[in-house]
Image 1: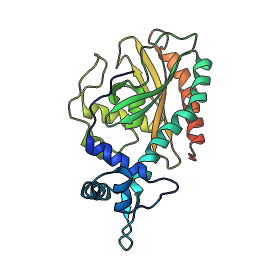
Image 2 (image 1 turned 180 degrees about the horizontal axis):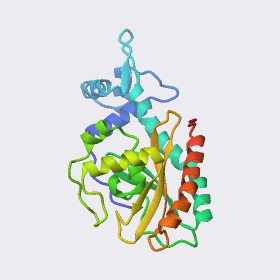
Image 3 (image 1 turned 45 degrees about the vertical axis):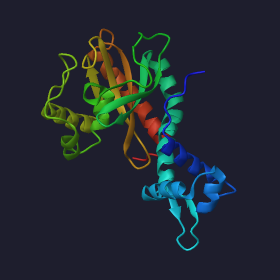
Length: 255
């Protein structure tokens, strides 16, 4: 068994308090919670006030009873959204990988980085050294560009620094250059990465939209640059766009 890490007592108690609320105990008094957890009422009261401040719990002022707060629903929906994308996308990216004989990635945007949340490698494809959980600067990847392109220039200017670190000699090196490239990506609906993140690796990417029309993820077809030359990349645009459109449709997107 792995050694248990450091536990923060106040956070542990807050979690225990939240776990007190269940199907048979949807509303509880301060006394009931303190008794259930064998904790001092003043300690429980302080934690409940903190949870109330962040809408993790709510209180009926007249009866004094507490119940779970709406912000927990917000957090739960964030998790469901992420899991739904992967669940919905999985069969589509598997089919696409076999169809084109290359590696297919599924990513989401976190700040100014992309995070890989799924990957399918065809038995015929060149080994691409990426793994679920890995992250890269968005501006050096095709998937990152299609996700950044969903933001306005004003939003981008707030989060993208004027000078960008060039990961390879082919990487975009400035915010100004990136904004020009993203304008093109918005217009065409796809993006390329040609040796920008890793020499010898190229990809073509397309965005995935949810029911509201927001780009919530992106997918790419990736492979060795020697095989994914300009002609082959052009041939793959339709395949990745059609697959992304199918995932978007399954997420409720209607253009």
